Image 1 (cartoon, rainbow, N blue to C red):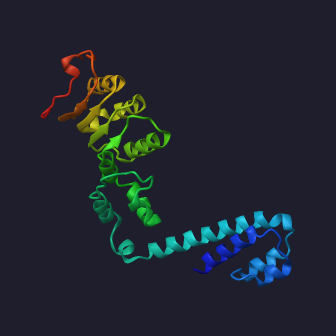
Image 2: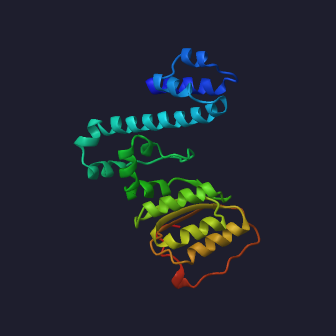
Image 3: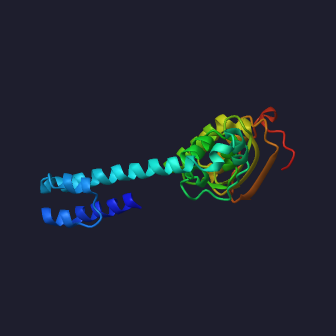
Length: 231
């Protein structure tokens, strides 16, 4: 709370068009060291100095929060292996938020969660709209595929743009189930390429929606088609 008060005061100082030394000395919330340093500054330096001090206080807050969270009983009474086992049972229904909630608890949980392959395999299983490529989604999928290691995972997709296809092909042997809706000609071609790429572990294929007309993909050699248990 003390650092937050300092940050609010510094932001108020930064917004002041004209600030005399008397105003600075009487400004509520400023730390003594900030008042003393501020009095030595030219008016042209105040804004830059305020931004720098705000960043410093935010860094201190993050450091203190990290220490506080690391001291939580769950972090020093449970071994990391047990926490990894627990994280492996976390399943999300959606990943619309750009952050993974469990990784935001503290630095220790971020480190452990980042190394829990099953957590990332579970995130790969969440239904995704892949009709339109976006740099952020491509980056997130790359991270999930990398951190999930060699674990198998199911996929549930709405569409399949070429950029995402190229991302999945190197990991095709890990896909155990594929649910997909196809609405465009290029998506149908992408699905054909994925199926003939050698999906050795694929056992379930569900094409939830196929609205492409006048399209007949080339039939790949039977030896390349997955051996399905459910179609």
